[in-house]
Image (cartoon, rainbow, N blue to C red):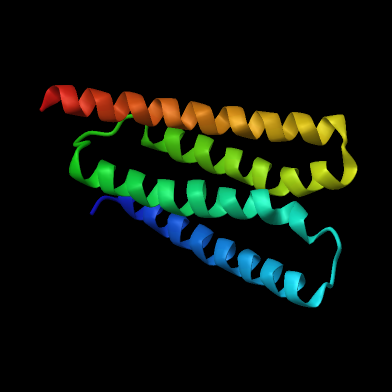
Length: 131
């Protein structure tokens, strides 16, 4: 297993733990009613679990099985994770404040995730053509 695959898997496991923890806190808040704004973290929880855990673990598997000489793996990982951090932190802040600056950061995070996905698509497509 290459270092890049390990990096994706470790990152995916971190997001899995954080996403499940945030989800559990949200469910306790639904039950006990600590905070009326608890639902502002629902989008962040989905980002952590779907993009952070599921997508990155799938990317690790595809890098391990299909891509023999990854050229863009660092770009994919960096774009995906910086974009994730911006959206995970920004979505609740945007819901609470409505600030244009925070909205711009959330949009930038989404664009960075898109760029990481596009770079990953290029890598996997290149690897599949070489088969």
